[in-house]
Image 1 (cartoon, one colour):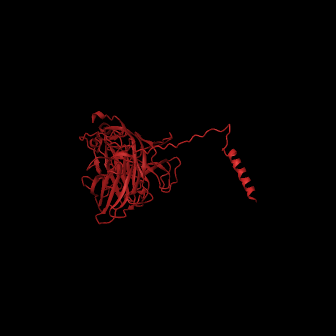
Image 2 (tube, one colour):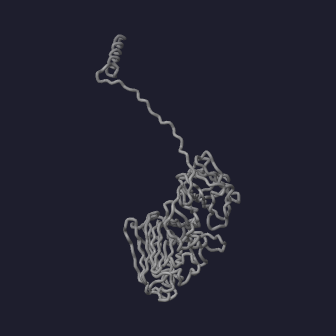
Length: 469
């Protein structure tokens, strides 16, 4: 092609671009305004003010990770305290960061160590921003050869509002890295309270503060005055009472097979002139009992109403013990007219509910309310999952016992039985309610546990005059 032809084509292209590409004028064209992108300046994190509150409950944890490499450690706050999942510190001086879900006044900490036969060393610091740290626990040494984990005081050096905790694990007393199953932090972000009257109950917890080899009993006055132990009995953030106990712990007597965190009804309401046991003002009887017993008892017949959610059941141990916990009872001198069980197997979403009726001096008879109590039960479609609230009632009128479960969806499951041939209407048989968690597993991992949160516990009896005690 000749150069003159190329130049002509270039001129034509330029001409077309001027008119088609907006280079020329047009009646429809509008001047384009330059739009500047507005960039918001970075904002500083809001200042965390000091928190003041007087109660203690479990604090939600959003993350735990190694300080050295930011490696997340979700198994340390997954509610599974068993040795199935444990984390070993990589060195004798390993630091983890605990990030709480919200700023809180921190008060206590529980570390579930895989090995309770040795002492473990640690330091703890607190911070609102991860830049400024305050030492709050200095060279803490855990107890050893114990059945239960230590409760670590986080206020001994100073009370701190924090969003972060820095825990330095310094190995055990054998100069070996520690293995850790779970970390729990307790404190408060605001004051909450429960609605359960505790003056007519005492509490059994699996501690042994008096070193008598048996579990401790917290009497009515101390309990009503605000006793708590964050490991076994205390508030929940939503205003319930949290009962918890592991497979390992101190028991109420040498004849008891299992560990409990459980209330025992005490109609005397702190009046120790009445004995704990016996047909007296501290206990009640069936209206089918002899008249002399009805005259001497603190009440006749009984009703126990409770609202609760079961939060945790055991996952390890013998098949017949896994997943079961007693959440309510009527106890007589030596036998139990009723024991109410919740049971959830590891592969099931929902739990079953059933109760046992013990013949005086005889065998147990079981009644299934929801699902099956079988060791291989399939998932009960109408069952109750962990953390779902429900209610139960245990009612006795003479020799008629009725147990009812009320689900959150309004459905009810009830069973009544005739106790005329069970022997409890003979003289000298006294009754009392029990509520809480009575772990029915002694073969599982020592750290495996049961937990339930009660929002209502109400007991009533004919002739029970609270003002006379």
